[in-house]
Length: 397
Ligand code: PMP
Ligand code: GLN
Image 1 (tube, rainbow, N blue to C red):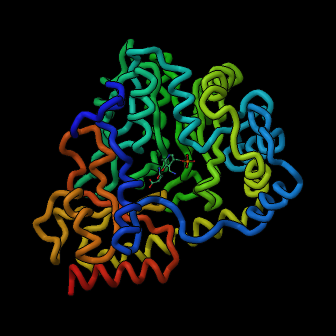
Image 2: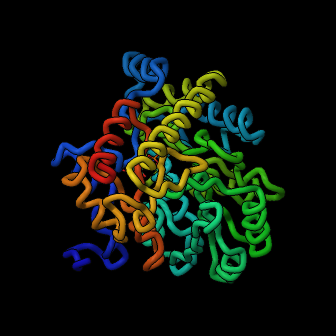
């Protein structure tokens, strides 16, 4: 990538996010956008009504720095209800501008320049940039699809070897974007064991905590002796289908929250005053909302998976999240023999009228994931069917 003028050395090479690039391509070509991860319908009407009411009530000035007391209380209730985590809403919850700010503030607050942050490769794109902004070093541990099961896993020896005296944090995302992996209890036990052994803090990005189709979501903070050394991050964007509201949160010990808040207050200070009470309404929705949400997305996963298979693609079924990946290198049909996901995705709008995202942009590893392509299935069924038909016509027709 050419050197950008003005941009500091830490951020050289980051360019424009793949999501912005691919959504712009979709807008320009009129292709169906299965690239950037966002739903094409609004979330629950009682949640949007609560935001409108809050604006009407005049909740339009700066909310309190840590977040509104009611939203912090709702986050604490949610952690207890779903994950049996006991959380003090006054000292152990911090409301942020989406999970993205929670991650950035955590890295900026906890890392010294030169510290190492272990991540599982591929990673959500903001991690590498936030680690760089914090002056820290990214230490990737590769997730590879198992030949037999297609399930992504890491080599325990590689994870052990990644820990050293320089390790400050482990940054883990489960359910995992872009692979759809849900970390198992056994995998998390090893992460926890190594964190305890090396006195390392874990940061977990759990924005897809309610989108698990296979296995069970286990917050790392619930493992023995991990509550005080884990920062649990999530947001309302995915769970309530309001990605543009950017209401997120971090849950951690009072000491960690105080440190993170110190950085956060100078990033955005606060955000989203009328959206905070609305997300509190969302968090308190009955179990049937959460059950229906995952059931709907499971049906969409199955629908898109079947259409992609019919188009001749080798589909890696996700255990969680709202993304399905395909391996173009082992696919049949018209894509047979292709191996570069970037090239494939750049040509896809013209070839099939569909936009997808190349998984290789999420990788630190120079060659892994080159042939993987990610499709978002958080779309109306008719949109998924139309995209599927286009792909079938282009690749299997
Ligand atoms: N983490 C992961 C794994 C994501 O996929 C996303 C995208 N929504 C985010 C964080 C960002 O979340 P937010 O929009 O709440 O900042
Ligand atoms: N998390 C979303 C994705 O993975 C996109 C968010 C963004 O555009 N930054 O597609």
